[in-house]
Length: 402
Image (cartoon, rainbow, N blue to C red; front, side, top):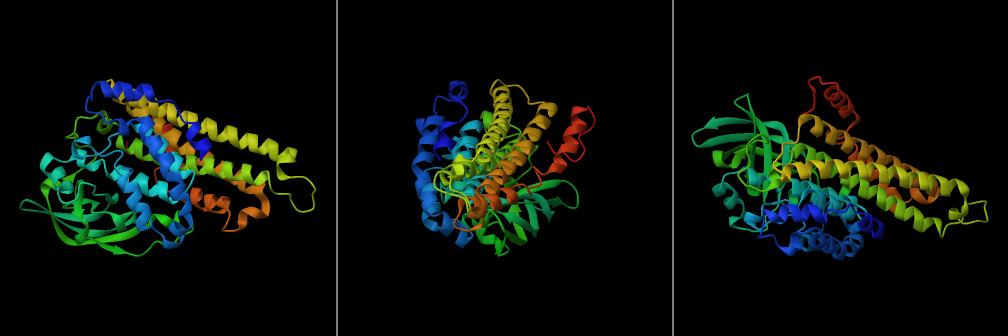
């Protein structure tokens, strides 16, 4: 945890740039305030890590503490009580949580991304989401797995969606589908109209509760529908940042945090373990020293590129410039590369730990499962290299939704 919070990219000046346009900025929403809150919460998350794993979701006590601290609303509009932090601060917070527990960070990542959605709705619809509960959490899926039929005043929506992390503690659920067989729209549905299907029996990220959910012929008023290409209703720079690029970068930040946690665990183990058939501590072996240094270089270099790419895009958005398709493609490349390198880092740490890393009591065992599960997300799979390569060659980036 210490390394994860002390090696963070400096972003204070970015906060200052954003604050010039936001005099209502609350101190608890700046980088220092957010990361201080993260630091205070991580011992609690660490203490519940096994319960999170066993229960396949965040326990109520963990969820409530994170909720009360505002960790589910880092990207939600200030207009409706959210933190609306800058992008880099959000990534740093996710990275730090992931160094302690990958599942907690993943749930926060998904729910925070979904928390941006009210910024794309008209004022009345966004206010409706928070009317009964100002701390309402949003989950869902933007893969268009459902269907919607146009009716007077809105749509009737049906379908089944997968990988809805955090759906069990969310008050609203987003479901995407094709309208009358044509254009894709997303629909914000109250949780009481959603049926959760228990499907989350998996190898890694077990505590995310990423079950399927179903919606059956539910009416959704037009004011609660949107798509990612819609012009945001809220004016903050955050909502002009390319949302798909942010999603990929957030996944990468989680995997980088898992990688950091793995290196921290290995470093601790190396000082206490004497490998079988040897008389020296693990840390005294030249091979371990060399490989640990290589893993550190791999993780730090991937992190630096990701955060610098995000930082440049953020500064462009704050300055009123558009992030070009070329730069968005590079952002996706940096995110995909960071995920691969984070997994490589965990693999090195697990290999160096030897037999100690195969037991479920080892944080390295969980890190291995969690990071390799994260690599399967479609936004950061190796298949992303081809469309990015096409974009770099000034060809249409087929398969890359920017």
